[in-house]
Length: 342
Image (cartoon, rainbow, N blue to C red; front, side, top):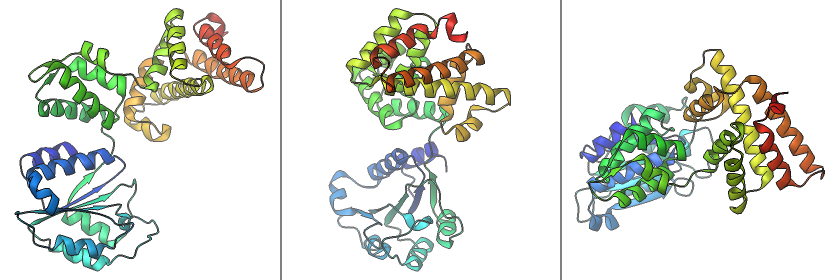
């Protein structure tokens, strides 16, 4: 089921007896669990009625005994099962009574909310238990949000924090942080405190308070250098050096971006959408979209030339022919010159 729909249901008190959460976006699982806990148990009840087990250490039957126990001084009990690799093809360190789990899934205890977390990209769909849990429970596929989902989530989070956020501010925040949900949540809390309850978060607030990621700084570095905004390019470069970023690492990140932009342009000509580009390039669709925008003003010849020149610069540094700080500075200075494509 859609993460945002599950979140809305939980916040409205519509909580099911068994949840199965799988995928790579652990933040989504933990966020949904917090919503379920907040409507299911008071702070006082949590100490006695919340149990958490890692199935890498504890057999499933031990955890299910807890799930079948009557709640203490409350109407509900929450049992969280982490690292549920038994739904995958991974080798297990602990033997689990899968039959016992099957029986529980088919006849769950009404007073218990069982939350099963399988933070893995792939499940073993051939297993009976995997088919059963996906059929009989509420399922969250915790995969990275796309741009539209991320915007909807930010709007929802703004409402929870009792502030508003305009569309431009959302775009600015996503552009500066990407779709790293943990970082987005942290920055939203900071922005909400800044504007105060009932306030409106605007783009200029985001620019003022949110620190750019290294990837965003690399994008800016490319923009400045390509457009011959030399002073800004060198200022940003030296600021990154002050932050203890290594010139060879920065060069590698620049080269990676040139390659991504070149590949995105090629796939775009073949009719691929950002979503379709994500898997072969091993990047998020939002990154593919940003790379496409950046690459639109750059010719294939320029991108290819920059990749070659970056390789030459790396060789010169590693062979000791030139100082690494000076080498990258010279590379930035020539990125926007006609020699770059000559």
